[in-house]
Image (cartoon, rainbow, N blue to C red; front, side, top):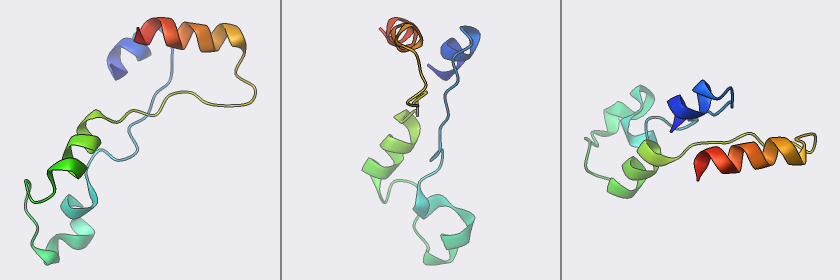
Length: 68
């Protein structure tokens, strides 16, 4: 979805591309992939879309149309 939005000049970000238990800072806790499947699913599927009080109705509609 991110590539499609980028091709249409719509910014999107994945803030949590790796769940916390797979981050290097906590690798000493020993939680391998699969220990927290919900967190991993969210990390793989979550996408932050443009959001601002200055986003025009037309821009909002464009984002919605592209997602649909």
